[in-house]
Amino acid sequence: MRILFLTHSFNSLAQRLYLELTARGHEVSVEFDISDAVTLEAVALYRPDLIIAPFLKRAIPEAIWRKQVCLIVHPGIKGDRGPSALDWAILNGESEWGVTVLQAAAEMDAGDIWAEARFAMRAASKSSLYRNEVTEAAVAAVLEAVTKFESGDFVPEPLDYSRPDIRGQWHPIMRQEDRAIAWRQDDTAAVLRKIRSADGFPGVLDEVLGLPCYLYDAHPAEGLRGTPGEVIAHNNGAICRATTNGAVWIGHLKEKRDGELAFKLPAAMVLGDRLASVPEVADLPPPFDKGGLGGISQPPPSSATNQIPPNPPLSKGGIASSWRDIRYEEKNSIGFLHFDFYNGAMGTQQCERLLHAYLAATRRDTRVIVLAGGADFWSNGIHLNLIEAADSPADASWANINAINDLARAIIETDNQVTLSALCGNAGAGGAFLALAADRVVAREGVVLNPHYKAMGNLYGSEYWTYLLPRRVGAERAAEITENRLPVGARQADKIGLIGDCFAGDAAAFWRQVEEFAGGLATDAPDLLAEKRQRRGHDEAQKPLADYRAEELANMKRNFYGFDPSYHVARYNFVHKVPHSRTPRHLALHRKVGKKPVS
Image (cartoon, rainbow, N blue to C red):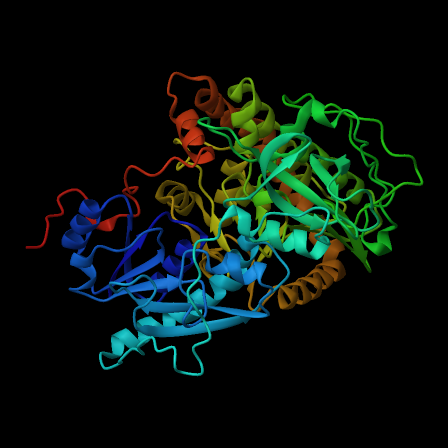
């Protein structure tokens, strides 16, 4: 069928549905929801068999939904209505939730029901649930609805609150007062629910050390106590704030500025000098068998811009928390290096810290190093928010790309362990190419890759992609992947050789299969490493890695410092969430040159 996506943006859910539907032979064109006139034009140009709205913030024009079927993907159970469905589910502590596919109608979220898929709720942020459980349920429900539509004889179910299976209800948009934190009354679980219900938008409005700001990125902090509401510690950009029965780490803040633009940044950076009297928790990792970084010390101070001034660490008998953005564990002869950075963004200092941890892991007596990334994202490359906040975004961009290149080179040149990138979460831009630096790459079946840079102001990209990508898929397909700027699903990536294997199942099943796969690599490590040394020697003789890097960086220098400001404009728009003014042509098939409206 010809399916038209009407969507606010081509977000992770829209990308996943795009991949699932195109893999089943459907032609999918995308139109961003800019105005009613633009939407009407898109429908006239494409004349779709079916319209699907994966992610909308306003109603579809009546002139469209009265003439043809428009299916809305709503992140709520049957009967749930309103724009804050997932927010309320998290705040109310629902144990089960779901996704409903319903038909657009005059009343918002009150149309006939085509399909529903449910899932068990997890103690996680709204963003994490959306990227995982909601996305998987949406795929199941949309595919079911599309099959029913194709049958031609399915009659959708009217919304009838008298039915016993209709448990949902109308919820108004959640206000800040609905999730305001009462620090002297709320325990850790309540604080986490409130912040998680607002992550990544709109955040919980609060005041921290006298500064009005929005809170994001919350994690429990075991072993830390203090006066409820007080900031009692900070570490690696995050702050720790006491609750009535413990404490929480808060990774990111956005300053509330009346009439001024602001965006999310590491909490300690936003607070700056306000943290002068707040102690810094030194990393006191437990032994390897408990999942810590063993005796790995911190890397030397970074020369990057926007550094957070260090404070004296707490005394040694003080406190370690259970949450770290970088951690390491060993199982038998396999080392697992986890790096769970917020939204997958890797700033200069994060790259340097991760390189330091990686090099320490290579000195361990293991046969395989698994680069595990994070739960929601493996990596999305350089940190655009930190770059935007720098005094010189060009200089910050240059420092960041060199830092991630240093990490990529260390992985490529490792020859005493087999390296395995295990992607449980999505990866994009430089993060997707960083994963290819490992000897082997595997991914969970639902993972979406975006191995291209051009959408960010025609950015050329680095991370040795001109070496890593062609050797896996060939020069012709490498050019196609980077020029088309389309997402690549894990199954497709496996088929074309971009990755080495694709594992079905949820996250728990994925990691069981990764352990088994890594065990096989450990058994074959001597032969695999001998083969790698030989291949690397040959490749280096043909063209040194340093030459690939120099050529890539010459192009990046033009992006950062040249006369064309496209990268800086695109980064600004991305960071400040500037609404789209048009749909990118590579997504809007109906807007190809020469396409005429259908009368």
